[in-house]
Length: 287
Image (cartoon, rainbow, N blue to C red; front, side, top):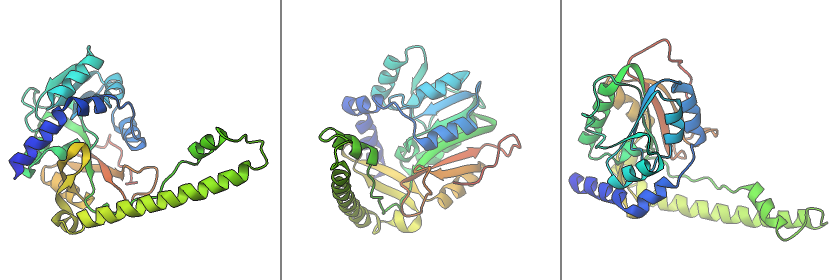
């Protein structure tokens, strides 16, 4: 029931606690920072779709000559206006950007997989058409999207944090410090492996039977914030869909950058598309 899915997503993002969660985020991922620095130049006019709590606002508004943030959640827009009272934030649906004139932005950004929450598919297509309309010739569209075939999970832990934890109980000068670190590392590695295996099993059970996994495109249930319906696509499907709308691929890369992305491991991909082919936009290889 697409209409119900759309309404559930919207109601979730209207919850004050969810808006507060996003308003508290103050970082860019390494992938985002690289792409913003590479494709958003000082003086550009930037439209920040699905702005949420304003996580990307400090960076984008600082480099932009004109900055506008848009979200369809009143709670999110209120949070942004409270944090950044001098900036322009609009309550609007990303599939209807009629508040903005044709060819009025140099860059449109839809970060944190916000486009995936625009359901059903017809509405997502209208959103992309609106992005095309408000972009100037050679303008760039930067967005991320979940990978429906991401079923593997890395077993990660932070050795630096582990050593900092150990130093709370034993000095580095202590002759047993190395042995303590060894024991803690073995324990942490085991825990990380078991946790990753459990998460892999959960993803395999939920995703492999789904049409989205086999087609490389479709809708999945996301347990975040009590449950969302998200649209997911593999890179080849995203590139084909955007080509139909006359966008040209500039670059795509896994959000796990600087690690090498893997088709069954990378959670989501970031994409850069241009409205037209333009020699001033560097054609960098995919990471």
